[in-house]
Length: 272
Image (cartoon, rainbow, N blue to C red; front, side, top):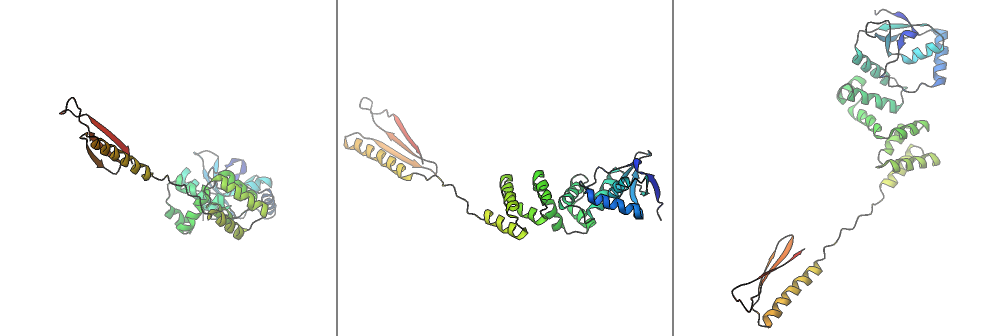
């Protein structure tokens, strides 16, 4: 059995990777009263900091805060032999497994395990006994802007409300939807239907500029008529037309009356 030590609360420091960011005052006061009556039933998990007399709380920060509120000077602890990273991972895992974390706190904690400590989604899913799809859904919540997440929590909206908002493309659309949800008091089902109605509106397609083939044909006919007019006037004009995907090119040779064997070249090029 691991040794239980009683450590002074002033020597216990919070874990910087503690995923819980909010400690409700009513909840803490209630826990403090319970600790006064019954003591701390579950020891805190701690690790020593750099061989000093100070310790970092791996798990049990709520109990520590409540004990301080109850004016208890020493709390029962179990000292773990772990380093900084192991302490952080254990703290996050212990808190994520608790059911009283908010869904945004849980998502942020899972994100920390993956981004800061190099765990794969599969490894985290296994440690938390969750499916990878459930884990992915949690992580998607972090795509919502921080101020949107704060508003959702403040208004007491649910995780399904948050998921529905992920279907909107811009932050402007998200805030517009949130205002409607708040003003109308929409429940989850109503919210999902509302967002579906605005995301399924047909988008106006931009009209593609039409290629003016008619103008090109007029130009070609104009060149042909000009050559025919020259021939009808006794000018021995010679023309050659080439055509590619990008342009039509005419080469017209018109003999000079002074030098019949010298021909200037006139290039008429039109991009189709």
